[in-house]
Length: 478
Ligand SMILES: [Zn+2]
Image 1 (cartoon, rainbow, N blue to C red):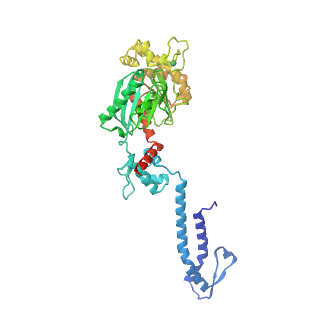
Image 2: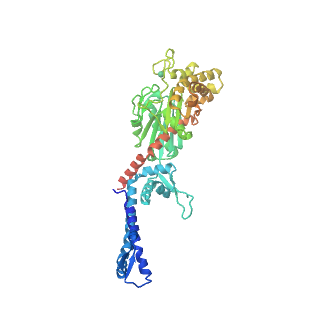
Image 3: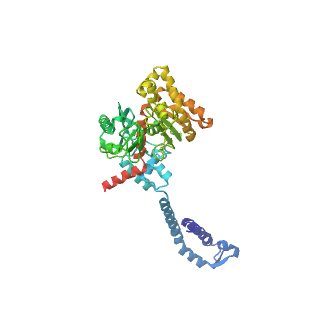
């Protein structure tokens, strides 16, 4: 391909022709002297002197050549310009409807006009994408955008009300389910104390029934559910929805959680580790400006969720953040749930503190601390310092902007946190922790539910998922 594009060649040709042609009107319009011939200096040939052309030839040439100039150049120019636009649209990434939806979700574009300007795609392409998104109920057109004048354009916005999500957060001793809209906003919730060691049949039966109860309470049909998510206190293969292993979940190893729930719903079902879900919930709700965040969940056990650039970091074995079984004191007499001695979980988890205080659960410890029990407070702070030793290493490795303490021990407010802060600041380089915020969870017991809702929302609104739904609708119609 020549470096000169079609339109540029056309412009150059037109300019050269006009240089020649501009001599003729003078010859024709200003016949100050009736002459048999006219000296015409042709553009560059001016240097070489004039050319003698008979007036009759000039007149005839004018009559013959004017129509092509008037018609051919503008038409040719238009054709080439249109060709260039069509080619540019082909060369541009042809955004799918699902990708257009992301621009609307992110707030990058609020109107059809803004979409055309932002993407460079044609009006008809944008209209096609937007109309299909509206028909499928992903977005609606409403309100009025401020504009410079003329007919005010309508604003495009995500329609979070037409589709629903069901989410469950399963801890070692509790279970919580929620029905939410497509903006992760809860519509109905249910909570119960339940031991996960009852096994998958009993626990997931309760989850399925609780899902149905939340739908009934909200008066919404099951076919409006577009995605389901569950988190569990153990490692999971998030691609297959199976539990890999968990010391807190006997009987769940390799259990196909998503299959068990999927018998009632034909929608995507995501299964996630609880600390990962909680971390995502906190990040999405309060820390979206932070590119790296860690949440440490301290309840019966200890687990960590890591968020990097807004995504859960899971590691190659889906075991990232599994710091509970780092062995700190190998000679300690306490045996951990994993069978080893001296794990940080056997020294600093809610269950470990409860055992030391002659109690059975981390929630009892929280109640003692809230009641001002000095022994409980001292033990909780010591546990915080012990966990802080491991967290100092994690902070030095990742250099996160935020470290959130979640799980039951977050209920002790400053006490556990004070211990964590002490160790992390004392054992890390000052510039690593200079901008580190160490805080307790703001979502509290609901962090897992919110995180799962966000995870499912991002999944069902992802470009590929949306395009798949739109393609299925098109197939159903045709
Ligand atoms: Zn252990």
